[in-house]
Image (tube, rainbow, N blue to C red):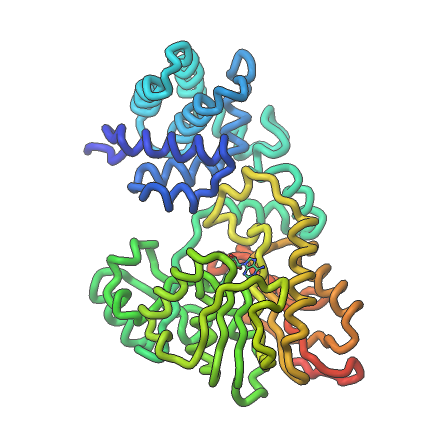
Length: 448
Ligand SMILES: C[S@@+](CC[C@H](N)C(=O)[O-])C[C@H]1O[C@@H](n2cnc3c(N)ncnc32)[C@H](O)[C@@H]1O
């Protein structure tokens, strides 16, 4: 039977260009994909190489006569993707080696031909041993970052914060993410969408919320019937749980602010669920705001009473002075809860201190726009305390009228101030949620 990986040199050349941009120019996989749509094999190679970067690096370095120069990162990218195909896919070894050697031509570095050929052939010969070293034997010849495929700083942070589950968590971070849908309850029902998708050959099962569906197999969204009609959105099941954090005892929402709104998953879910009388979606990147508005049109939410505004949530230049009774702050963060979907995050340095000070600045600034008795949902897709409980701890210390309001979710675990989801539940990415109420500190807020 022909192997789907045979004879697709163009896809490999797209993968090489993309991987080189991720490694040498610090581009994210999302940015690579914006520049160049990724055909399936290119996507598999790019994501897979990033996911297993550290074990591949260790396997290659053990076979390299000396490190490559900085200006030869393109050759390094080529070796990495060759090694990925050898160690983690069913690409026949001869195809992985030969297509890599052929790609040297594109780099215009003829000297690299012998190197790529020699290193990958050696790896192909030892591939079983190499795979064992890299993935299964932490005490073996490949140690440290390699066996858990996380950078050292992150492995240390996770071991510190999750002493009992860090290894399982890192393993979970290295899996492929599932695909979840959120039914647009203003346009359809879960039962109808389930039936449509099952009939179209895309089996789905019910997720934790009444509007959540889990696809058995991740699928290109445009192939799913009902998508263009706005009957559902693709949204991680953990992200959907944001809506379960609001205080249900508050009967209605008069004025909702989503302060960091794009691409709009949580905003649109909140519009479907809370049905606020008015809303404001704020975003500081014009292209992201435009994409958010297109998504609103697809879902039919552009008809609702609300504004989509370009603005920086660390200041109040965008604000008309009318206070909000509910604020969603889905703060920019390290993204360490989403490594399954964004494995490239592991390759790039993260300035946690800068992130944390921005998160606190956002919270402090937005607090001024929340009315008395109103609630603010603070959210990140981070697994790290520095961006989560630690921000809340600092904030309630400095803000006399900020009160932590507790809640429970069906998965994950309570933290000191909020709730942490992790991919230890394979249905969800890692999200942190904490709810604050504006009111005198003496008020005892009941657990919901
Ligand atoms: C984590 S994403 C939000 C995801 C979104 N809530 C959703 O569920 O689809 C954070 C967003 O905040 C935006 N952002 C970052 N800093 C901002 C600022 N100072 N003011 C407004 N938006 C900001 C980013 O461009 C990004 O689109």
